[in-house]
Length: 149
Image 1 (tube, helix red, strand yellow):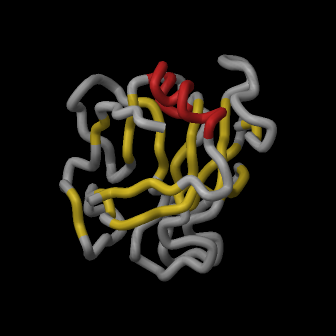
Image 2: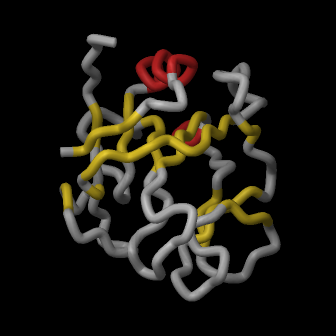
């Protein structure tokens, strides 16, 4: 749409060989397969967005059958909380990185979310300023792709 936005990427830089826990952002052309949001913090950003509920988690345990999928508490394997106290995951776009059939250890939860602050690295995700992310979300279409080069 002719717009450019500042972003932050993973503390491990860009990579062609993504591994779980390396902090790197995988290069490539990625589809968007989901949108999650906090109903207590914002209006529904798109008709296909799914609310983040208390107890929603994301599995990052390569040994678990639900690796790189949303799961619910109680969940003993390693995971990330989707319902955070800070606003970082108020709106989350889920990329198709290592999804839907995840390869163990190839990396999980490559999200697009709000940044902590300009230039503050992520754990491998792509992060935008809050107002930019909220501008982008309702404009996403089935053919929308994220290019990380």
